[in-house]
Image (cartoon, rainbow, N blue to C red):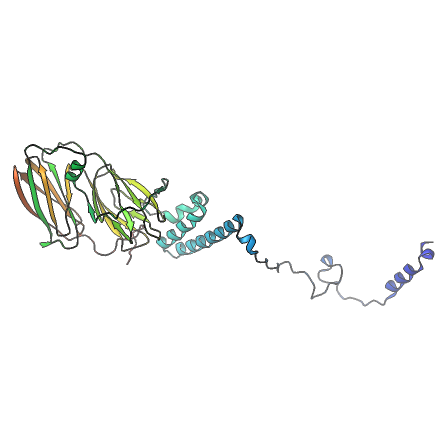
Length: 350
């Protein structure tokens, strides 16, 4: 009865069913996935995903878009760091990893940090300090008598002075510096008060180049350049790595043991400096010709130590200070390794 009411439908159905059919030797390869108009040219290919459309500028400039761009940069740096590590370039790998860490924050990459920092000095992770540039520091800093004058400590009523010159391999110092310290031969004296000092990074060099401080002193290392720096030391008495940080930022480190600490920047092989951590009650840094002077010494017998930045170890001798003027000339060896300081993993640079 439905066919009688709608004869057109019967005709269409008959035409469709009555069309001649062609036999198929095999069914279509993707018959289960294909319903209408399927053929070799239109067959879906799951492996060929459509390319993602580029993000509109309006999206790129949103906080989420900016974050996405940062994370892509971090991922690229991390992949390059892994490649450098696989090639055995530990120093380059750690630098690239540190740059990625600046983007993501250290917590996000903490699980793999050990892969890149094994064999380097201990990493200092204290909070960053903000510091504004001030007048440039001098090339050298360190005098017990200057500290006493600053603290208004009265000199001894009966005093002797000691002046002299420090030579290296029998030749006067030229463009380099040294340190002279004095300890009472009795071995008894009042420890000096620890200080808070600054060694800045400016114009891709450290200032001061040599600094003497009492044991227990804390030094801040601000970056006043437009480039990143990475202050570190592999010296046995105070190994540390302050990590990468930008202009206006600083980290601090406290020097708890006596000895010489050589500083380097892991990004700039030409940068080096020295910190003399001193337990002696009297000390002074020489000028660049080796001249030094103590003006207010209690007369008596002292153990004198002298060192230069070209020497591995200080010399030690006994001197007697009498009331009035005293003179001594000193000589040290130029036996320290020449050339740039090794990188934080001990690798050769320059």
